[in-house]
Length: 513
Image (cartoon, rainbow, N blue to C red; front, side, top):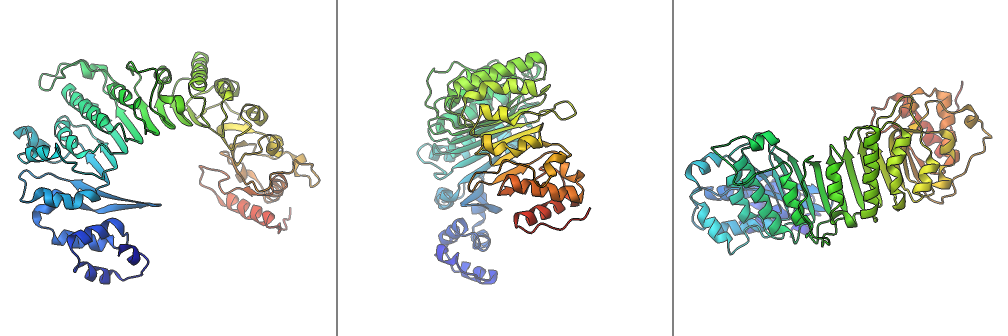
């Protein structure tokens, strides 16, 4: 019924009337499957539930999040202190609709839990959970803590040990360990260790972002909440790696902040992990060496790596060693995105990138490179010699010349996106009408020419017109929709787009000097 109704245009008032005559099961089905029916069905569910039902499953006002081709229903799950009659019967009515749960470690009943040692209703739920899956269709779990608390994770561990099913496919963890007691950190590590052990067979995407505690924080006496064993920064990732190496379905791993003191545990030489995509960041390179000495990145096809390692000669040498190791361990990479905080010059940049020439790259993105002024140039021909199959090339803060731009399609024939700095002035010889240019021979290719330099803003109307004409001679189909990506474009840029469009349409404007 909901499918048929989805193609109708019905006033909200009529939807409200229809919902009054539906059962709670039908209302829940509509709330789950019909985007435009959701609000009416949710309101009717809310008004018709017994009071104790609201303590079981609290349907949030914006719980249905619609993405392209995907519907996610989010519930906030509460277990009351005293279980009402028929608790599990009513729980089972709504539990199949729960696909995405976001857990905050600062739930309001934490103090009650700490004082009473357990919630009175919890033993019944825990006993039931031993033989039943409470949330059978849960696919995504976000465990987030934006502000540190010292007593929250004991209750959270109890809750999640029963609520997380083995079929979970996405897990997103954020934890701020700063100011947490050693005992609290230890309980949290055991919580995540248990979740990863339970879900390791089905996890497809894992994101772990931890703000690590300091050595002093972990070694300071904590008589009120001590840990049973010595803890080190990076313990969360270390424990996770033991599970990741044996996750057969894991395809995407994100570690936005890798600890500088990471200790990689002893892992087997072979792995059932077939990781496709890795996004990782670290302030130094040594922990990254540890990661690439494991079998985890052996099957990567997409790598995004960020480091703030200083741009000294010795540091560049270490980066060279790291990229050499990456090329050897991960030979199937086709897409790479780097963020380097400090590289002295283009020669050092090429030295870092050179070991990757053995990879069949189709996408190379380098951000964050801070080079000296004036803008240094890098040869597109050299890049093409390393990776002739490139389709996307973005190197910020590095320039290329208009002369190389003229012939780029001859040595990078698959290129569809180019982002580099351009000179602010076009060489006069390239503006002459009879200039010999390398005509684009690609039959239906479209090139997105992008610059992170505001060269368009320096063009006068005549030069803008000539430059647009120049581009149309080089590429028959050229896309300048993001010509100066990252800037608030002024009227000059808008005028340039209009002029270029006129040239592409074969109606160039008449410009007077």
